[in-house]
Amino acid sequence: MWRAARGKALFGGRARCSECHVPPLFTEPGWNLHTPQEIGIDDFQANRAPDARYRTTPLKGLWTHARRGFYHDGRFATLGEVMDHYDAHFSLGLSSAQKRDLAEYLKSL
Image (cartoon, rainbow, N blue to C red; front, side):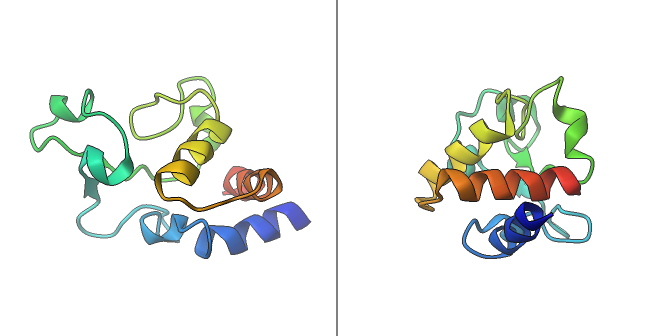
């Protein structure tokens, strides 16, 4: 329980998740699309969409992605890989313990 509570604080703070994954729906209200450059990935899947963008994935029920993959296009096999990607792309400087706490919070949604 403590991990999820610490993860919630990270979600809305240092990890910056809530900038795009806005509670209570955990996606962006209104315009919820991003260019590949904004989220630090290639445009392979985005190019299949009419506007060449990725949709901000709602995070509720995130556990359902465990078999199909995580992230906007399912490219990452684990939540840890997603957090490592965002940590590097946005230079967040999250520790391993913080990433574990954040993962516990995400799994609780």
